[in-house]
Amino acid sequence: LVEDLLTLSRLESQPDQLNYSVQALDELLYEVQESYTRRLVKMKQTIEVYIDSEIEPFAFDLHRINQVFDNLIENTFRYAPMFTLLRLSAEISDDKSYIICKVSDDGPGIPEKSLPDLFERFYRVDKGRSAEKGGTGLGLSILKHIILLHGGVVRAESKAGKGTTIVFSLPYSSSGED
Image (cartoon, rainbow, N blue to C red; front, side, top):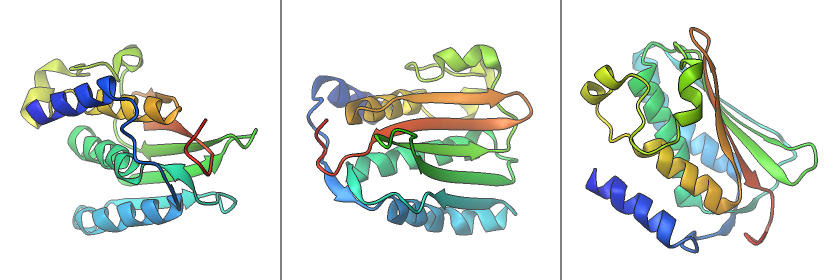
């Protein structure tokens, strides 16, 4: 909890702390996929990666965007443990100015009434069961700040019983400057 509070505080008070470098997003996605594959195979679950072949390396903070993907995948394990398919994807926006990333699962979904508050500090969809599953209630708030600092946006799409998709955008730039 203390570490998450410190991370959030640093992100809010020091917006220039991102370490931009030109990276290949596909390499990151495949590394993330590889790091979770053994864990998924044991549970007969699958992780897929789809990345638009037109995406060239671009500037983003590799550590922080890796943190975003890890957070979303860990949340899937925690709150949708019976999922069968987890999909990581990235596409170029129609105007070619953003990369649109998605992390989707086929788990139980999130009630629509919870979607507007999902990225707020300490918000929990199921207050009673969340504490027993661990977590601090800060992960999605940290994720939101990382994406905002990159100049992107984040949102959740979900229907109860149909799975959840977290969508975030990253400016498609080679310099890290907007």
